[in-house]
Length: 116
Image 1 (cartoon, rainbow, N blue to C red):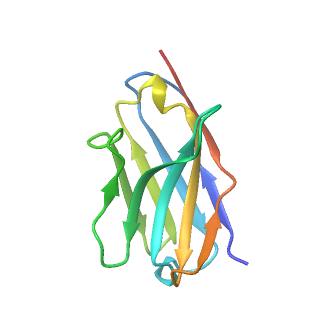
Image 2 (cartoon, helix red, strand yellow):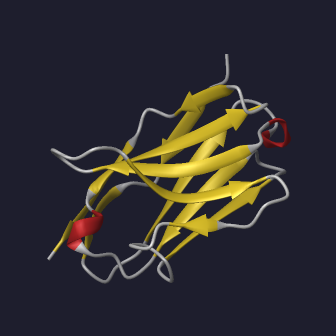
């Protein structure tokens, strides 16, 4: 069973930065798509950023120019660097992986709170 362990969330003031990490229990080369999603209180889970095998990086419009998704193949870790944070970025952030376009894996989530 694939395990995803997220870390890096916390409380930050508006304009600040955080870097989320998603450590994966097997080689990330096994996965076709790696992404971050978020869910704010009372709202549906929404897409944030994606990195896929052989494909471009993609971002939600709300985070373009502020967030950067990346991967470290040696550490089997996916990152989300978040800069210029806004109160509306407050949410639980989830790491997501897809294998063979069939299997979906989710992390447990990490809370990000941005104060105004």
